[in-house]
Length: 396
Image (cartoon, rainbow, N blue to C red; front, side):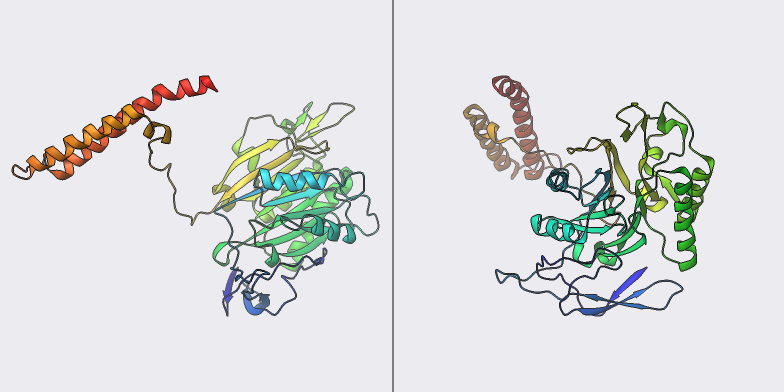
């Protein structure tokens, strides 16, 4: 999919009003510039982009750009819509901030539209929630995508409910008119319902001709290999076949397992029996897998029986950034003996350059002498740092 802007897009002013949480989520309600979205084999679709506006301090709001590495995670929070579980959102806000997560998929949200609006007001600086719940049973199910306002173009994100409270497709714009499509999943626990769930998604994608998602992540409530259960045992064949067929349509692979082919890792532990399983996963396309890194399973700082799965997607168009040049530590420059040595080396350099003016060669001239001077300075500074750092650490 390509996007051709007719005019220069920009972000909207800060708006704390709630956005719709089922179906399509518009960017905002302000005047906007039209943009044509072209999908291969389909007629053009017209969308809106908000023009640049001034914030409350009179400064022009510039278009938000995505970071060169996108960190994505998934976590089953085991309920987050009641007064008892409301403190979990403080932890979620903290996780986004401290672990620099850009996009977080959460399951078992149990959120009403009013609760989502309250959370938007409470965490206005960082949290934007796109939620899908089951209106017939608000205290069960629920799947959501939480966008970090600090690092994503959250105002321009769009969403589509695939299965209420179970499957939610969110498209988030990235750099240079690129975008990432994320299918958030909370699959049924019953084996028969689980298999029917994958078949329903498969049928809808095939019949509607929707674009394939780049990622499919969440709580799958089943595993594909005996290796992912403790004690090891396979799941029902109809579940595995239904999910395999959907993965084939999406052309996706289990990213964590690809990176860790023989590692035992589990994301869920049953409290009573102690049985463990890796039912929380992130599936990615081959293109995403090629630019992914830092696949992790780790505990989350909130009350849940699941662990969080995370990964990073690198921007293949971003310039390579090396480790940088070594610099002399500031504490070395404050050492009087080192400063005296540097002065002596500098004086010697000036004398050598003066003499080289009358007897210049290819191996002895101002440029080669200056390089030798710099190498000697670095050598002295490194030696002093190696000697002083252990003493400083010991003093601490």
